[in-house]
Length: 297
Image 1 (spheres, rainbow, N blue to C red):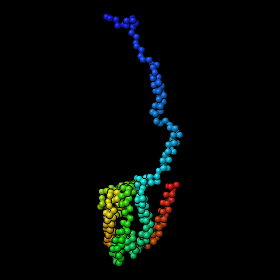
Image 2: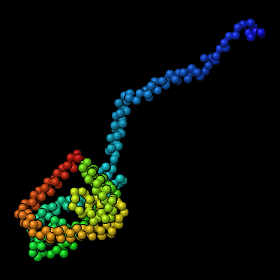
Image 3: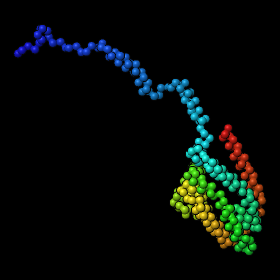
Image 4: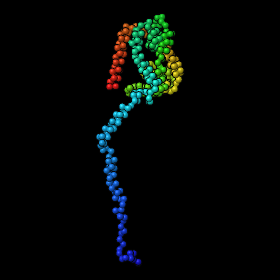
């Protein structure tokens, strides 16, 4: 066989690889060594950050809170910068709450005598007053009832349009605020909203049902949020309120004397109840104002 050795007589030596000292390789090795600590630091996110960086971040966060506009608050019903309409609607809703609270002593006083019942019904649209008016007429008292019921219907719905307006402006915004007061309120408003969505416009006639759910406000807000026109809302509101007041009147008429005896018993304490309610209203006003000042402070 032919000899495979090279012609110079030496045995085949392994060919040396490329020269390790060629330009570029040493630089890349150095780069790898320098980048190793950085990769190690990135792979351990729980390494303590620089205190100076933390303080700078806290300052930026405080600055962001200070720069937040007054209207950009979760307690407001809007999700944008309010317009004049938004401010006016919220002011009307606030006035409605204050007015209703201030009328409690007046209601208690008007309820204390049979001759004052027509004015209680006409000025307040009182359902209990309408029931008692029917009862005293049943036992023989000659009192008016047509004009008190008609006027009482108008007075009862006089500010309902504010809830419709709130729904038109903010959708469910007011419902979310009411529901956010407590867990119990959240459950009650969720239940009332489910009923309102199922009933549709018929819910306007259910809004005055005396049950422990905030049906009235929720139904009125959703009427505006769902696009019901103001004319239709006011017409349905008037019709439903009148229907219920007439129903209360006839209920009292059929009850008759037992309701009158209850009225006579209450009349003995009516003035004291009115005075007590005045004290409660004034006390609540001071308490709310002091609470607001504490929150601002």
